[in-house]
Image 1 (tube, rainbow, N blue to C red):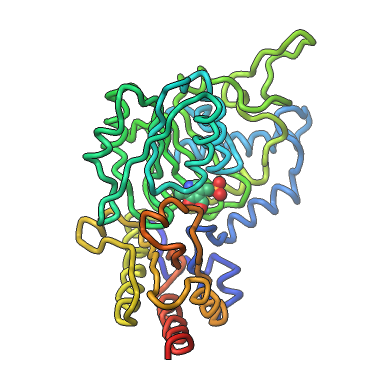
Image 2: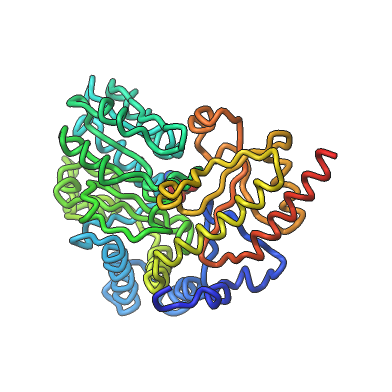
Amino acid sequence: MANRNLSEIRRDFPLLTGNASLAFLDSAASSQKPQPVIDAISHYYETYNSNVHRGLYSLSEKATKAFEDARETCAEFIGAKHSHEVIFTKGTTDGINLLAQTFAGTVVNRGDEIVLTVAEHHSNIVPWQILAEKVGALIKYIPLKSDYHLDIDVAKEVISDRTKVVAFAHVSNVLGVIHPVDILVDLAQKVGAVTVIDGAQGAPHLDINVSELECDFYTVSGHKMLGPTGIGFLYGKEDWLNKLPPYQGGGDMIEEVKLEGSTWAPLPSKFEAGTPNIAGAIGLASAVSYLSDIDRSSMLSHDRTLGLQAIEGLRSLGDVKVFVDTSSKGLKNWTGVVTFAHEQIHPHDLATICAEEGVCMRAGHHCAQPLMSVLEVPATARISPYLYNNSDDIERFLVAMERAKKLFIS
Ligand SMILES: Cc1ncc(COP(=O)(O)O)c(C=O)c1O
């Protein structure tokens, strides 16, 4: 870590320090929150709670400044050129729905193609299916190779002159694989397609620079990166955001309303109808500042080390299939998430035994049913280590696995 020592980090998380017997290993679903984030939200409600952009009194001016400063902080975090390229949303799902709805008839028309990967979260499949149905477009999928990496040879065939959108996760929530953004953006750019990156699992772990990635859009969920729930943001290139129509109508997104019709406010307000999640944006900015103080590559290697400890333990347990490519290339493109299936014990039974031992782990399809079919399993179990976890957490998880084996097999 550049500025913070990892062993100190855990102390910042009151839920973890207050529950010493808890091993929280489900951060890919939602992370824990450090004290500064909790304090930033409380401070807003306790000392300057008011609506933004409209009050002429000092409370509202202070809230407006904090809200717009939060936008600046998020823009800087992802290397956006302008803060008005950051649109506050409820999270990644909301951001992708905004795009899929505003692309209808503007970016995607009848007969056009949308390219996704088979490893997407439902949030990056269903909105596109709704769009495709609405306008009469077709969805094509980039498959996975047996090592769980995208098949780029097939991607080169699937992305064609008919492709208008290429949308993919920066990091798979199931496999923890970091997808090759540079290659996919390049393929999309060659055919003039718009690129949408689902950054729900990328932003919590990786250094993001959208200007270097050259993507058109990037979506973020605050709650997966130490921030509050119900807030995230969508980055979009200014030109694109200016071209797209508004997503929702209402207060704040207008320039002028007449009975005969209305005109839209400039960016970013055009896409932020209604009173925004002010406390959420302030909390998210605090989370972003907290993460910015941490060296992301050290954090990534910490998460991978814990993931590898878990894999080693699972393998010695026997009868476990781990969906991680542990070759050196695989490990370089992996965030440390360990998804696995026991040949004889259902993931829900594993998660139940874990819960009894104070270990929080996820079981199910992880909102990626198509990927479960590709992996030929109905469901899997998943642990997702993050910066506040340590090897004791993994040890406790492995002890719970041993107990499950004794209970269900012998
Ligand atoms: C890869 C990916 N995309 C999208 C989402 C949806 O994010 P949210 O529920 O914050 O909108 C998730 C959440 O698990 C995810 O992991």
